[in-house]
Image (cartoon, rainbow, N blue to C red; front, side, top):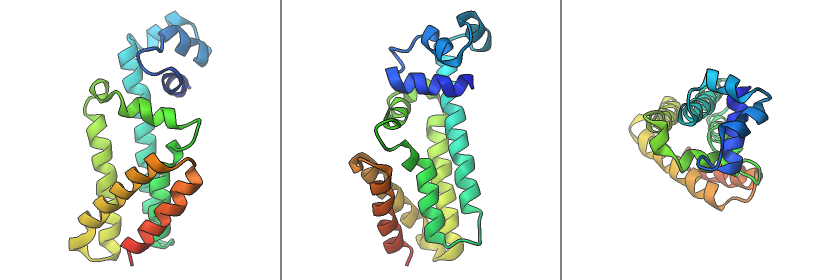
Length: 170
């Protein structure tokens, strides 16, 4: 609960403008209680983002592991779990605070996107031409990034991404 409250607070105010007092208030705990759990704002930020990214990767793994659903459907949902849920007026700031502070995050800022690409590549390789899978996965990720910056809504993002995935995995 504390990490979720911290993520929302960081997203609302940005890393630099967020105080431990604001996070404690949002989490309904005392500031000393927050400092007992996290000795600094940087450690709290890293823990909150790590939890969010690990939760996203776990959701993607779960979606892609379902062999009972068609590959394009699983890919769209995987991208939705990874990026789509961060699109829209209330959620855009969560993605921005993560993207704007990679130096505070350490290796997780690199390892989780790499893991996401590996998961997408593996899912494609199982059901299509193995040699083309890395290029197809990278193209999907590029399309997702472009759409994420264009999209005003999650629905628009998912609609357009579905078209791109259908074209790439036929």
